[in-house]
Length: 56
Image 1 (tube, rainbow, N blue to C red):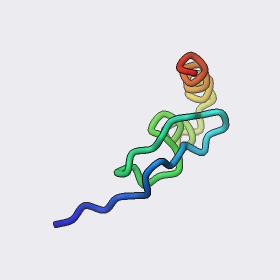
Image 2: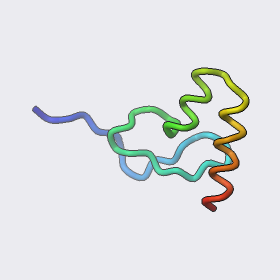
Image 3: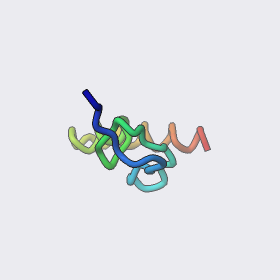
Image 4: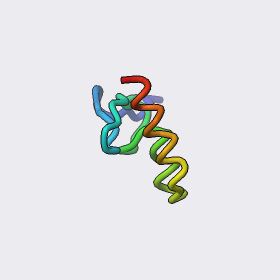
C-alpha cells in the first residue's frame, strides 16, 4: 500500500513562519499554527510567533 504524500519544500502559510512542511502533512500550516488557527486562540499565535522569531 502506497502512502499519500504532498509536494516537497512547502512552507507554512502563517505570516513570518519559515517551517517547511512534511510530505506527510497535507495541511497548509505547520502543526503549531494549525492548532492555533483551529482553536482560534491568540495565546497560541503569540507563542508560535515568539518561537519562530527565536529560531530565525
